[in-house]
Image 1 (cartoon, rainbow, N blue to C red):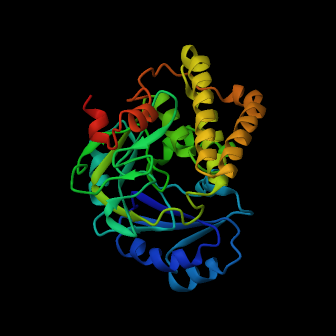
Image 2 (cartoon, helix red, strand yellow):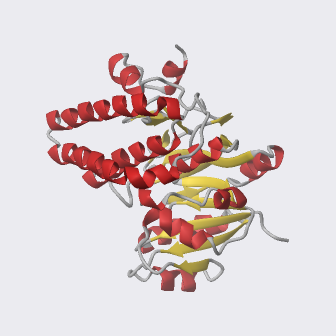
Length: 334
């Protein structure tokens, strides 16, 4: 019987992570065929997989293509109906696939699903990258149920539900194969960070649904490939967020929203300076110039969008820093 899922790990010199987390993926994912897309690793990852897990199929990319292109290249070889894009630093749990399989079966227009993502290092708490499903504010700043900026909630069952979300974390993302291919995959100009939000936005532009399933749990190490306090990450996040807004905003909102967003980025840069992090401030400045340089190319990627309700909060910055609303429930209950 053909399996419904393809569980696909993108790897670059992550042998130690594969040694730690691949065993559970194999043990608890009987409904899936397992693949590792390797971005030209030099640490012996491929030999380890072939010896320790001969049932795991290896797809070799010619270079280190990053997250977006790495997956785009590798997934052309995979035909299972539903793709599971999962980081190499994720610990899956017993029966984690069962509720998501049922959700796809019962919801025909469902395209993308995210499970509950908890912190591998502190398993009682949500994890930064995705938590219990993602949202955007009006100016493109992402936040999650369970995590707003650096405030992480404890998992007390408050998000053990199934609900519609705006974006699913690329740390563990289920997507129908035909939808991924119809969207031409990830935008490779992003390289890494926020390409999954762009993908989710484009999917919704075409009428697809995205949901969170709190009945399925995984644990994420987080920051294993690029530390959260890395200026490179700051640069990619700010640049890619501007690119995403330019591509996907409804035309009548584009100029005003981007103008205010650029001003808010300036405030963020000042805040980094006051925190004694000049490299992060410089990263924001560089991200803006990189965005301006890419505008001619981005004009060819503009999505038709009539989604005016892409945001659930006008300004998450104002709610969090001024109104002191530190968790999703307080923001939701206005």
